[in-house]
Image (cartoon, rainbow, N blue to C red; front, side, top):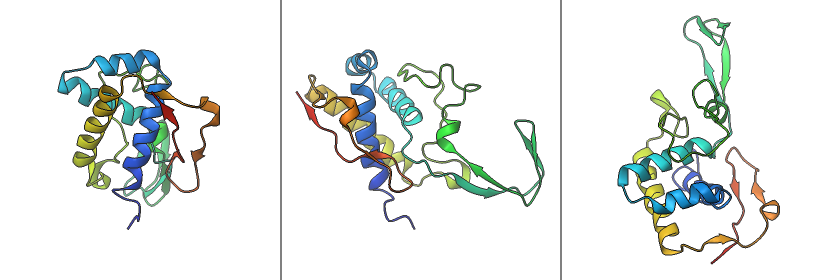
Length: 169
């Protein structure tokens, strides 16, 4: 069992999601103006696609012969599925390396997929919607207190985050 499950990934998402919005004034202004709960949910889904805290490839074994991207994978062969790469697939997402809070496609692998779908997904979505909306509504002048290049990223396990996110208002 992952000792960080339920605690680490949401905390890292709060930091990285906040950073992503603070670094994109246009998208941040769009998010701050949102009042429709469905639009907020969609924006959080896009943040989850854009900022993927899990960078550990998922090891799987094919149970049947399958062709993916023109490559035959035979039953019994192993694969390494990379969710952060899938979330930036240009055949699925137009301009995938751009944060677009009005993006209509909300399929992503931030919570896994199929039988490996995160059991805390529903709670996490609620937390993200409440935290991001509350943060940017209550502190409309929130901004980074240091230049982005001074932010130290946490890279010492399979989760990506920031050690701290200095902000001011």
